[in-house]
Length: 210
Image (cartoon, rainbow, N blue to C red; front, side, top):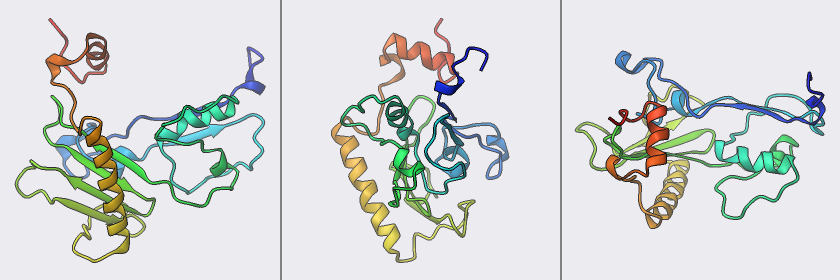
């Protein structure tokens, strides 16, 4: 407002991840990047458009962080590059979209994470695959009905479910696509490009170079 740009400025507030509040393991309080439960994946997304042609309110449909950039480009009237994983949220904001957007998440093996995991979420259900090698006692698959169990405490993997089968198929497709692009791995720490290493160090994900 002070600069006179408020009427031409879109504001989007979100976060890159949540934080572990210690509900599963008190020793993990304040950590992130070590599991794929909703306390780490589900983040706020607040969109303000000064000339919005949709009513203000809360939308319960699932959106994804990969949708943010296409949405901003759409607001700016700029073309969205082909091949992006996300899509503009404008149809959802206007109430023109009814289909659920599937959300894919992953934890890759890395210097700070020993075990790879992937997840697919359709808004109501969520499937987590703990990839081999995994610690003894870890289930290969976790399946949750978030409408009944938002805390993801009751693994329903032993119950036959069309939702489970559908998410498992989509998760397999996503993993196959990623594998064709290099798999669910990142380079060893010493092989990281200097610019990427510097960014990861600044975020606290790597030890600072001597």
